[in-house]
Amino acid sequence: MASVPFIPHMKARVLTVMSTRSQDQDLVSEVALQNGLKDRDTALASSPSSQRRMVPSFGWHPWFSYQLYDDSVSNPTYDGTPSGKVAHYDEVLAPAPSTKDVSFSEGLPDPRPLSDFIKETRTRLEQHPLAIVGEIGLDKAFRLPQSWTAADEAQRDEGLTPGGREGRLLSPHRVKMAHQATVLQAQLRLAGELGRPVSVHGVQVHGVLYDTIAECWKGHEKEVLSKRQQRRIAQGAEDFSEKSKSDHDDEDPQHDHHKGNLENARSGPPKPDPKPYPPRICVHSYSGHVGMLKQYIHPSVPAKVYFSFSIAINWGAGGGEKTEEVIRAVPDDRILVESDLHTAGDRMDQLLEEICRKICQIKGWGLREGVERLGRNYREFIFG
Image 1: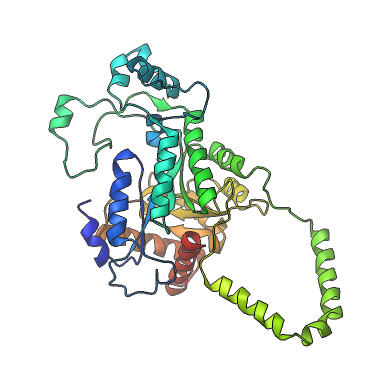
Image 2 (image 1 turned 60 degrees about the vertical axis):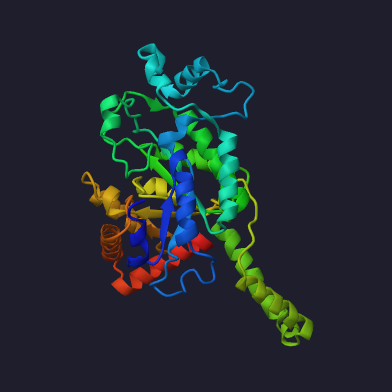
């Protein structure tokens, strides 16, 4: 929060700020009221010195998914009692904490109903019409931090938003993938219902992540025509065009009226078309391989899937060569950039500039051309 005053002075024109857990949902909303973009038409047209530089994002990160329980089922994992709290964490964490240390579960927050969080998120999204859903997803590598000790509490940095690790050692406990998937799919459905894009996190679980997301659009896949079918349609269109050419030459005023209505519709903000899956998806700091990428951009996929890259994640731990191969394979209109940093200001600008230069170099774009492309992609992802 201490870095928020730097936002209006940054080189970056717009930042997408992600919420992740219970403690930061209201904080993101409050900052957006002061710094958030007001409407899509003037979002990027105002002065670069404008304070309005933020798109808020509301979601529950997989690292904190254990704090929610699915209350839509007949036998929820939590019944509101102390013993029920232990039972919930035994059910959603592996290994089950009570087998060795019941106090670990007792030190965790009381679980919240998933339906309550979805209801609250819907309200926040309606309050912020340009907001997206995120950061959500799946993570196989994450382990919960150890419980707070008195010494940890005494050394806490009060400037940090509560709920983070803050240097604590890691426990052996991970959130079961099935539970993470339940929380993820509930948020994907909400995004689809409201027509909002989503930012998705995926670590060491690329196949399961794809399957979990694809489950939402099952039965809504686009028809993929063979090359022979495409040629037949193209030939038929040519024949129709020649036969009907004279009809179009004598258009009446009513045709012009309909054309005007169509242009007006295009100039206004698109109305959400509720679906069970989000219209646009960004797999952020994408670390999967080219083969998985091709599944996301297959012509049958009804959602438009983007891939963002960051210096912090994609060039860490020697992953640069693999990342460059993936970036070359990403369609030019599906690539985004990010800092993946938790503080605004000069460092974030530096990371954004560095990733822009990297992508332009890999893609063979001139710097101006590349930055303009990335800007267009961002506007398309956020606003449709």
